[in-house]
Length: 464
Image (cartoon, rainbow, N blue to C red):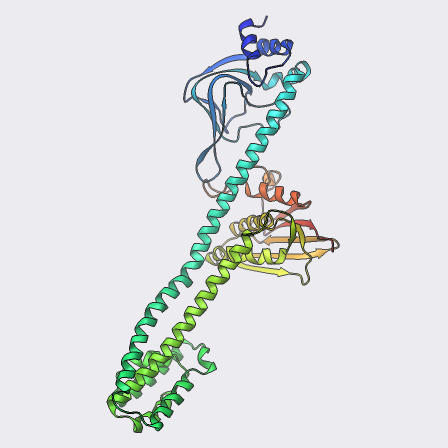
């Protein structure tokens, strides 16, 4: 006979209120009343879940570690249902459930679920609704966690990528200020007396020669050293400080171009003229470096903006997959360079667009390419290709890594499954990728063997 007091407590349970008394009596008769002390583990991700917990009093929370440390994702109090629910395919919990305070619950073990489904229709219907709500909550939490992990990787990569051009801008700007002061002092020396038309003409000619289009020509270190020695010898021969030799060596000038200055200036003003020419070369070189670095920063920011689809409404719209792949490779370029991986992109000309959400698709490409980069050894190869096949668009990510072991191939898309070390993978990337692809009415497949793994995403192309 069921305990009448327990039946009354079940009848007062918030979630089970309205359930027929006969079903409450079945629960009371077949369940096990259990008490859990504060701090005690109710279930964990290292052992099977015992069954359905009907929380009668107290407080239980679940903490999940998805690679960035443990985080509390859900809580249950008196009046809630937790644990394993009928029709759920879950075998172990996604995290560790702990009693936050002394807790009392009625446990219906999984072995009794078949009879539960047959005898307690109302209870099972309630459990199904609870399971759907819980699945939505965990899906939302999973998506948030994966986005935060992706954001962390993106921020780290972007910071690394921006550091070099930003440092170049700062360094060149500092040097530029010094050379501007050098120009001021040089011109004060030149204008200590009147300048003739011949002197002004020669200075203008020298300036024109030093700013020709070939100024961007790259020279080897040996060539630069030879040129620097040549200028140093000329400057020393004419009693001019040879500290300008290195700067002049990087210009299009030759030592012979300085010869016409000699008969026009005395030694002091000759040095001022050389000093002015060197400063002019340095200023133009530094402004070019600043422009190049700023352009690189602009390209990186544009790529990140395109990758994240900032400032765009969250409604389906035509997506340029080729550009999304290009932006993704730009964002992940630092990781490829750090491993000396040959990362190539081949996008078919006139590739059709895809109707959907660009940010979600870019997250798919990011997860697949990031995993491929993790899979290959240093100096490996990763190729990304996009092409149209009939009315479908196909994206392939291929790597020459060791392949996916046969015993885990069926699990790679499972939530929280990862082969990476603790803290390096959430086990959510491929699960999210599959969800996003299916949301776009597409499919994701994998073919793998030692030395070659291919992830293939097929999406319906936009209808013109």
